[in-house]
Length: 84
Image (cartoon, rainbow, N blue to C red; front, side, top):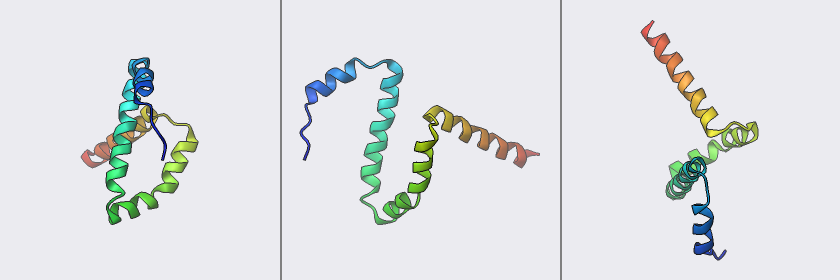
């Protein structure tokens, strides 16, 4: 088991830019969500099924903002087509 130096970690966090803090918050929320969902068998199976997609996204070099923009664009397209 790894020992964590919380004072060092806090010091490093305090030196981050606001944008990095926002990104870190999202990552921490992801880790908490991941730990919670992996305790459920159906969710664990779904998480494992989407592993290739997560890997492809990681390798794509897209930022979280890029991915959000793509999702927003797809949602807008569906809404536009639905209302047409």
